[in-house]
Amino acid sequence: MELSVTLDYFLTKLETGEPRPIEEAAALCKAAGFDYVDYSSRYTEDDWEEIAHRDREALDAAGIKVEQTHAPFNRYDTYPAEKFAEYYDRLFQVSKILGAKFVVCHADEYRVTDHYDPKEIEAFAYDYLAPHVEYAAKNGMTVAIENLFEDHAKTAAMIDGKSRFTSRVGELKGIVERFNTPAVRVCWDFGHGHCAYGNKMTEALKEVLPYLVCTHTHDNYYNGDLHLPPYFGNVDWMTSMKLLKESGYSGKLSYELHYGHFPEALFPAFMAFTNQIGKYLISLCEKA
Image 1 (cartoon, rainbow, N blue to C red):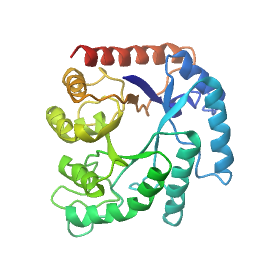
Image 2: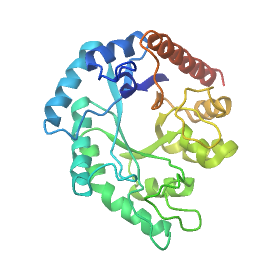
Image 3: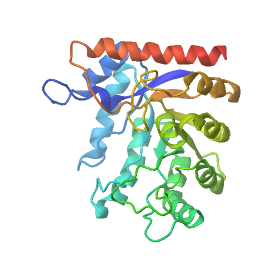
Image 4: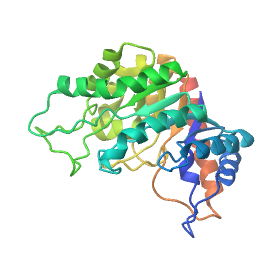
């Protein structure tokens, strides 16, 4: 088992807010001990293809491989509705250019109004994902559907406490099994799982282990999706690593860090320490 990390975490300088060139970000990543990244080039730009090719060249030169990308999702109305489908298509093409193995997708684009019918939502998710699954399969990639949690977003009505598909493990398994192809598997997000299931998260993880191909590895507490490094919250990492070992999981532990940045003088040391934490987790898995 090896480590991966979100490259975006390296792409902004704290003191100035300026973007960090991808060459410099890749060098920092490599110096901290990471050889693999979770990264999606800027697919919203007009010259998105050229950007993806330049990014691939920069990462190749640094000895960094893109393990996984993340498809856009519009639960929070981030993108203009009329552009979302185009951006979704572009992301899959970008993933091919970058050489990604996995494209992580949310299956929650259905908008709940006056009822919550899991089978109706599953059918909707299947239809909108199906063309992308076909593209991924033809190009040697796997669509990894991510477990989510009820975030009580203002953009989504709650029906009996439910609005977000795949916040329940049965829904996640259901959509994967409906596709019935190795081209559709699961990305287990430890932080989301902890928000959704609390101290019963490992019971839910156990159910999807046969489909698990990649992860979002981060920690939290008090039901907040905080995206902290492991051991900065209260996820049960010992049991989680034991389950990965028992299942024969051989994919990456991929850090999905979003929030908070360190000053330039501290950033390399923080990321090196984060890498050490990851290696410790891997050692637990190997000893379990």
